[in-house]
Length: 270
Image (cartoon, rainbow, N blue to C red; front, side, top):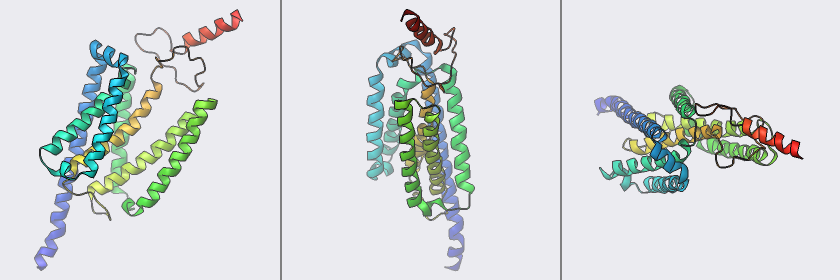
């Protein structure tokens, strides 16, 4: 009995390390597959044109992914019955990929690639921070939830300032509130995955853990598309003065210059 008690922590540690390695490996596979598919969807003319014209397809798949992940969370049998768990996890992942494609095809080629790399690095950094900080965030889940609610309130206020009053830099403040909330929960997720804290995810739930990390990445990555050209409204002359001017290969001038010319013409005619 004494030997068993002494060796139990060792086997527990090995099991948690194995679980964490599987989770992070599956997450890495999800990220690589997503990048490859988004790149191909953007590169191939037929798929690019299709998703540009039929954005509703992406909406359907993205909403479906949200419904499926809810089912995956609340019905445990779906997570532990092989191969159903792998099939459903892959379907959820693909629904997310197809859903975001409606945004990918409208973005600048190199911007979505560079942004993907940047947010992947951010994800890794905060996973490492969550793994090595001494404070047990799993003890403070109520505090994290309250902090998240406060961030949402602040974010919504500055988002409305951006949409209604076009206040300079308000969108970046909105983004900062949301990203701060996300990275806090990324560190929390790292701790429940690695184990050794007050709360931890079960060592058979690696698919759910990988999907959660992929959604964490997606929450940050979606901010990338604020820099995409607004193809749906070519006459929008009231863009925020903080909007970043972007030059792409197929454009001879920035996206803002034609709109500035239109405004000048209107003023001259008036």
